[in-house]
Image 1: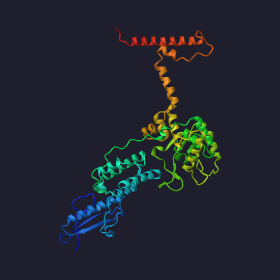
Image 2: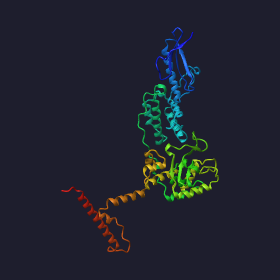
Image 3: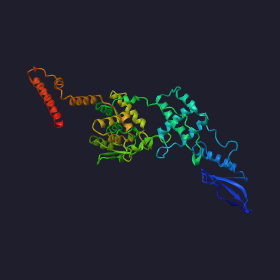
Image 4: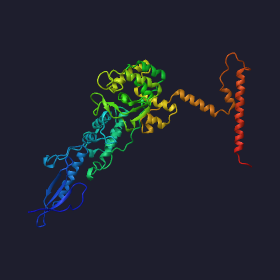
Length: 454
């Protein structure tokens, strides 16, 4: 008997259901089928005529399994190869969270790596300690609230990071699955506010002074000492960006430095140092090289022991200078400057602060640091310098109070020793008084001129 396939009875988002007919035109079977998420092959199952409901149920189950596979929570296998007793995993929070780690990507679609992956795994580890064995469907607002207001021994920063991660993870569970699969959760049980950022201890660290920077530079080993001048004066580079510099990044003729890569320990944040991508898309930048650094850069390039090696800072062991090696050099050198509180990151903070104080706009400072968000620069990288604050306050007061002759006289410096009241100091006071009176007179004339004619 020759079978004829009829078109699907209705269009579906996942798979299709067909009626198989014999030569007489009678329906001989109902076939449900869909495309494998692994190899693109057709997966099908036949049912007796009139059992369309069973075919619908089978497709719905298969859609759920495919959705769990695409969410990273299980590996799809063909129905014929499954253990019929356990088609789907016990969907706990831990299973879902592990799948979240496997499928999580950067905004540009690239895989996450290095410290970003390490931090993600650390957050998930702590969240699984709290909710790992809880069935995802039974994770209620009450359970989340109990955890939220409970003890958090890993500190305020870690708690905040876990809250952000938990809210994002549960938001994904509330999203529809692939091919119209229903959400795993009807609503997000995380309804509490994300805790505010704690005050960072590093925000209290003052910028480096010229004298301190010079002492740190001299206390560093010869082959890495230029790193502190570059980080403080050229682009405010992160420590990984400094380690990743190559000789081809320096255009000394045009006096610019191209920051194109960083150094990390690879995707799993383990093993030897290797060249990797920059922290963010905005981190790729070209920054000016100050004239004063050009001779030092030329000298450093000439003094490198292996001229065939393009790394600007060449490691004593291995091919690439490790971040921890440079960090240890800096930590020892900072003591010579009497600043045991300094971090290598403080050089980046110092660069940003001085750029703003010396006239750069916020946009120019953001470009120099490789930032794309104003808040990052303003909140985390700019410091108040007391000396500059006082100078600015004095200039502001001198301008706004210049019309008051009594204040002008009071602000005069004391007369040098040996001058009496009838000497030069008296002349200066008289001049100040005269200038104040002239200023008052001019202000009055301007006010009268501004009045409409009577």
